[in-house]
Length: 589
Image (cartoon, helix red, strand yellow):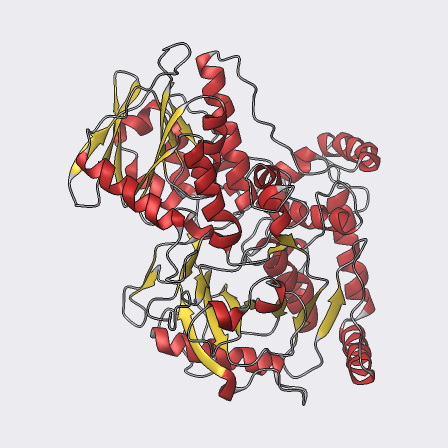
């Protein structure tokens, strides 16, 4: 990044957009110098993690790739500068849709990151990942629960006598607040899921809400907050009352094994050591450009055109508002499902019924807000979950995890020294200041409400962590608009996992021979709205394309979630019981 905050990616993407606007509408049929054989062309529709992954895998296999992106490369994963915040030759304050989280259960995304060069890093962008050593459940009106994250090489935090006393108080309060029979029941439910066969998971637990599976409605408030709601928010960023047990249980199982060091690609919690674009997205785009990928930023897909049994083109709107048709040999639709399905016309849907089933997939709001502080807050050295907050807040203070970045020297006006990045997961419940939902509040009211809920969780035990005097400014994701009006909108909704939706997910390869799907809504092993799911789906889309062509190019590796070998015998036993119409042997009901 130069001292104006303008990145090489910004320049290159802008140049590509201008070039595309004045060029011909069709993708070029490029050739290799050695053989003069035309290279197959691919139009990748969408430049988020799924689109960039598909472009990466295709370019490495010799395809001529053009990526069309409506807004900004990186999609929901990107970071962005806060408009008007750069002063004195510094870059703008770093904003984002929401903080990045790359746990050790991911395998496909880290593999891609290792293949993205970064100066001074032997393993490329992957070496920009750092592992927080702890996390916290922040309780309102009681001591917070601060937990170390086990992993070889992690050193325990040095604690003062006061901190040790608070930790013991939190532990005793939690144990005392959770009746032993509730703890025993939750452990039983975890063991039931752990030993359930795939058929029971897919056919029974997929149709059972986690709230019902854990019998949360009949349990104490502490049980509901910590074990039903808290776990789903931390692990799968979804709502316990709606999320399928299959989704929550599968990811919970993976995280448990990750913490035990089984089948892991690294620690259970990893984040980037700089703003996302600096640490990952910009180097990725630069690398793809070096592989010959071309980018058209500011181009909006309006419709995937279909005729004679194939996709015949993509109707796009260029940055100047001119509609044109771009053509290629193959098309990878890498838009989020809520945007993609609007571009699939009746004829295309009729050619493959699984496209119509995508209308049953659901999205919801989960959006980030950043608070810039003039003092570093004395918070946990990692993620925190405000368990009792009405708007289901999770957060992380970022500057301490960016050791090579002098925050006030590089960003903003030199006064802000840290960024507290917060995810708002609940937009439809009243807050504590105005008695209104987040959608009913104006942007300014949302900021004040979130700040108040953070203080209620973090300043309630005589050790204030957040000071009003230290609040420099805030930035709410620009994808949200119309707040406080009857029609609030969100350009960046998150795929959610109500019961039964697993069976509505499409495969990456469609019945249309030159049309493929990539995105976290595609049926992949990780049933979750994640960058890992988007990456795995893109790999599957490229493999389906290679299969369709009969290509002899190497297929993309797609690594599934870890399965503990010692559990397989128990799952086989449960499969027999399931086919006989019996409960899991451990299920006490």
